[in-house]
Image (cartoon, rainbow, N blue to C red; front, side, top):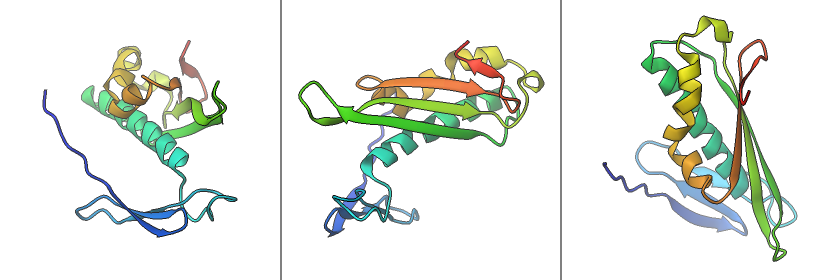
Length: 150
């Protein structure tokens, strides 16, 4: 197994606003807490976490389908992160729900059952986050037919 070190740099701009630098040619991103803590001028840490989970799941589903030479585009993913207080009264992400929608009807894709059984196990971010936060994953086709869970 190959290991990779990912480096991200954050520099405070003012108050709760941080410029997030990813290096290379990737433009920096402004992250900010919502009011009343911050100004909400950029995504919050919870939004970034939800985006990372959703992006990784969509990438994994796309990769798994493309391995079978299938074209599911355009994919869409909606992610909800439930924030609330834990047993000690501290704010935490309590659970995450990701809903992926294929851009085509399920009937037009070969090997879909096999893909749906395994794609999420290859999602690095979701599998890592899922060790501490419950993650529920649903998949629908373009006709809103529920494919996962069944």
